[in-house]
Length: 304
Image (cartoon, rainbow, N blue to C red):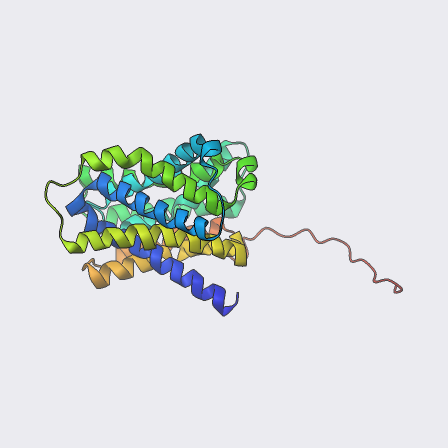
């Protein structure tokens, strides 16, 4: 991995990690649905503008139904659920729960009939222990509110995992991934717009929450999506998904630096367990990687 790719990877981890902090700023003032809908609208504008600059077509008339369905599952509902959780959970907690997406992906694939490897199964178990550690020994007192917030984050992660599985090979290969991202963000924004407009606050919010929403939509969603797909193109999907390891770490750092959220031993251990689980699922732990099949060596021409 060269320095350029590593820099982009760290930058993406920093940006996505900050999204949980910005939600902690916007949601108490703007509300859950205005935050989710506003984030989607700003992101859609950024991605559509990027497509226009690159002279790529959205093909809205052909795929609008797909964009609405994919948008709701991949962005609309998860963004609303994480915004709901931001009322009660620290930014670091939400980011750690968001990192459980690979765990649910393993379970969904297993339910579909593909038995996972020992490393992936171990990852699921370790990930569950990480979530339990965070919930049981963290800084939050157990209550119906915090339980609902935990559940919202986990349901959002299930939706993320299901969306990755739901995209058919035909649709994923027929369209540019950035086009699909822009179309799905637009579809989700249109779907959530009525709810966001209905729940707008009665008074004009202060500059701080509005600036946080702008950063959340333009930088943390629109620009981050474009950067992620650029990373996939330049480094491959296997390296690009390693950003999963960085997001919870930066989310805890930003929360501690800017909104005074404490980093406790319980939150650090829970985060470490979930990240170790992700490493197991990605089969990046030495000794638990699947052994490659070694083919017989072929003789070079003219040699025996």
